[in-house]
Structure formats: C-alpha cells, structure tokens
Image (cartoon, rainbow, N blue to C red; front, side):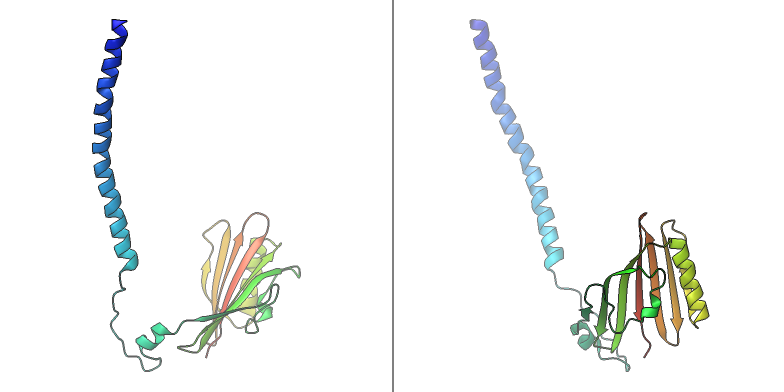
Length: 184
C-alpha cells in the first residue's frame, strides 16, 4: 500500500509543474497572435497612399476619375449584350452563352463587352477558326498564346477596336471568353 502512495505522490507532484510549463508556453504564443492580429488590422484599415495628381488633357483629373466607378450591365441568360458583335461567336451552332456583360467607364466614355460561351468543338479547331476569321476580316492579330496544353488565347485589333479571346479546355467542353472594346 505504501508503494501506491509514493507513486500517487510523484504523479501529484509532477502535475502542477506541467500546468505551470503550459501556462508559460502560452504567453509567447498569445503574444505572437496579438502581433499578427494588430499587423493585419493596420494593413486592412490603413488609408491608401495618396497618388500624385497627373494632369492629362484628354481625360478628367485623377481625383475625378478615381471617384467614378465603372458600371456593369448584364444581359439576360443566354443572350448577348447589345454592344457585343454576334459574329464573334464562332464554332458550332450549339454554342451556349453562359454570360454576357458590358462595362461602361464613365470617366472616359469607353465600353467593354465580354461574353462567355461553352462549345463542344475542340480547342484547336476553335483556335484555328478564330485565327482564320480575324485574318480574313481585316483584324491584325497582336498576340497569340499557345504555350499551355489546355488553353489558347488571341488578341486582335481593327481600326482602334480591340479584342481578346481565351479558350480553356476542361476535358468535356471548351469555355470561350471574348472581350470586345470598340474604338472611339
């Protein structure tokens, strides 16, 4: 019986020591958490640095342009925005428009129409059709992205109007995104 009491005393004797060590190890962890939270709060809630005013005669002053937000307008599901040329949807007649929207930039009067659609045609066939369409319709291809195995991209210009197109092959269908910015 005495033997059990000695063991019990030893266990009881060590338990407070472990609690004290746990409390002491929490102090640095708590301090680190407080520092991280404080640093995050400073980054999130600080005022942005003031930009130098740059005078530009063709657009409003930066203070006016910074306060004017672009305005987005979405077309109904399956429809195109009025400013998006439907002839830019190449490929099968079964192409499904997933979204189409127009962004108006009030500070300079420009717009950008973007349309996403799904196609069952192969990525390489679609890419070839777009290259052919642009070269046959007076567009100048300004960039061509072919280095990725599951995507392709093109940029083209025509008379001040610009267009960018990306095709992503997800294995089942091709997702095509086209942004069209008419010239002024």
